[in-house]
Length: 194
Ligand code: GRF
Image 1 (tube, rainbow, N blue to C red):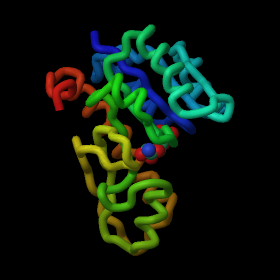
Image 2: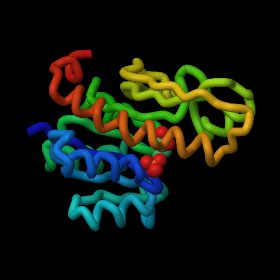
Image 3: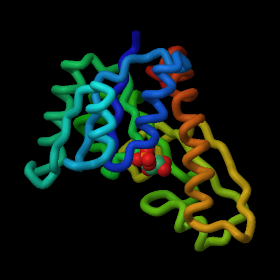
């Protein structure tokens, strides 16, 4: 069975959606590792409850990105991870991981990329008063939300939307689409031959 690692920095509702999809047998994979750069993040509690091993680090304890990424890489190798799934991981991936897992790192972003990359995509969409926004799942490269797009899904916005109402719709979409895209990628050869 193909094995995945999830990287997350915060609440981890997408991590939980992936775990739940595995339990429901809609996603055939083994989640062998959670990587988090935020000691104390709620996603770590979720992983412990699910008995999924974690590697938690604080970037400030390392001189540079390559140092902690080498450490992450050891854990990925030890757990024989095939695919890295970023789910609210608030850091750019560096050369160490990009080279070791070329074409095997994906991310989910709460906008229709290339619109609204980076932080607070929902706030950016609200401010721009767009009538549609959505979510994007894409391969990860060295840029900020710039890699090749795998899947997108849109939502229509009324003029009464708030940040909370948009977030609710976006997260419902994310929780459905991410597990199904992971399933698709893991069971198709293209994921490893972009
Ligand atoms: C998601 O909206 C995802 O698109 C973005 O970060 C958020 C993570 O939410 N990259 P959660 O921690 O999975 O609840």
